[in-house]
Image 1 (spheres, rainbow, N blue to C red):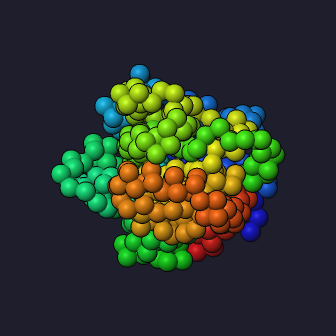
Image 2: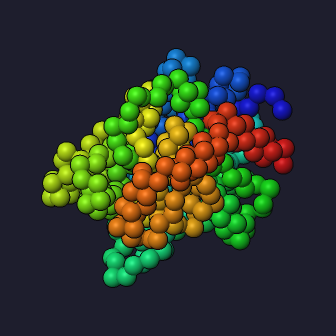
Image 3: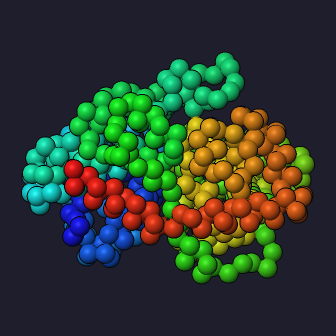
Length: 404
């Protein structure tokens, strides 16, 4: 096909720094589509404008900016009480902005998350633009509402409110996506099987997965010695197991006193993580780095020995791949989705046994033969997921949707 016109709907971005996987995929792919001569326009808000402009020069971008809903926008990534009105109001403002813009005939409308502010305006644009197609990123299915993030083990656990909010978002948005979307993409084969069971035509469901900038990784030299026994990368969010991570490191320091952990990321649990670190007296052992990207992040990764990925519930978890591309083997809980997302280069731990997790980190650090074997596996797996390939697969899906 010739040049595509793509409208990316990213009204749901709640923070200019906190980079969820759906936003990363959209931005990295859009960068490449622009380089390849396709027309790209982002529908977003001022926080999204700040995030996107860090990766794509502003003068190369067409953007439709919807105003933030008062003070809630700046707090939506950290406070559920702010996130709920933020999503509702950004849905309305996104719809209003979509009604004022004329897009070329045949535009592919791409909702970059399954959240209301991206789904409802995407549906509206699909109806209003002749011969358009609507693609939705089903980046993660919500967990069962009464189990929350701890779906795979444990008892006596009250579901976390953010998990309930994700479920309620899905209850409203997913039926619309099933009836009206021309295609979706998911993160792994298990989610693809679910989508087909739910009625999606198999040819219109693509597994996109994850990506990594291998050229950036190669450009950062290896340090003469490692500073950290382990590194975590990701949002400081209940789903990511960041409070459990502090328990893990407490147990690990009982095995290796004084061992250091680097934590890269920010999010709603940042203050609670700090409080727990202080409670356990681990201020010297756990370094909270905040948001990092590019060379700065790769430098910390290469200064670490092991990637820790303690997610409680996940459809993948792209951040660990960046560590793998730097030669770090990983440790995670044994989630079903991670068995297909990370089939190699990572030790799986019984869900949600924090002491067993700590022992697996220690095992990797201690057993040089095991470390080298998993390091080779991690590097080989990461080499399959370059961003150029991800952008081409997603472009191919959009081209196929346009042919139908």
